[in-house]
Length: 306
Ligand code: AMP
Ligand code: MG
Image 1 (spheres, rainbow, N blue to C red):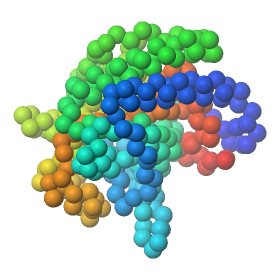
Image 2: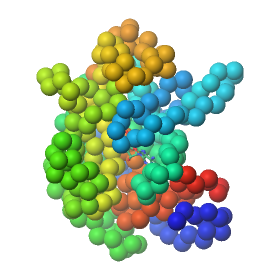
Image 3: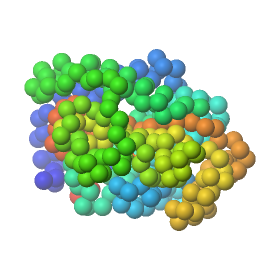
């Protein structure tokens, strides 16, 4: 049941401990990225282009709200994926951002995993392959687990297992055939795992040697906590991007000036991902609902109290 009054929100007693864990998580992740040569960019929250979130199969089609700025309509960011590719084209070869995202999820997406305002640790690496990203993420997640293990035991009596690297890898086809969904596999798992080859947005790269297959990945946490990261190698060639936009029935006019940069041949090959901070905090603290880790809850279908 979503918190509906200001009294319910301020009466919550575990917020200090949850923010203590969140602080350790963000500190460990950002330290790990910094040590691996990344530059920390600040987010943009408004733009003419953002992530279409379509045709990602697990995402219901949602439209970015717009705000009029100096007579022009700008979108609130769904994610910084396209800006990351543009930043990489400027020579920022290893970047990360703590990026606030607004996604007006439908009320039926109130499943404990979705909020309509959340933060991603979003990163991108020029010329990287999916194996490079998976290796880096495993390092970051295992370091985070080591860092918070004692605190979450002391504060919540929650036991986090020692993660075994490399994490197990499934294809989406295998997961669907054997478990029906990633969430079901998460429920019966005790270790984090990867799912690869997921059919979704145009910017994730199609495998040239295996048409119809994608060089992308999700990281899924065990015990039913589900997906905490999505990413992929990226399309950077104009013709391929245009073909995939048309295939997804997306209007190229919604992607200017990103497409203009692609047309000039300035996008570079890259790979990256976005880690949902609230979802990671929810896993480590063992909370049931994402609103339990948001100081100001943003539950789909429920107007915010504050
Ligand atoms: P995506 O690329 O759309 O999968 O988003 C990247 C990551 O952001 C996901 O793996 C989640 O951890 C997180 N995320 C996406 N949508 C939401 C949401 N509605 N609420 C909370 N976290 C989200
Ligand atoms: Mg995803």
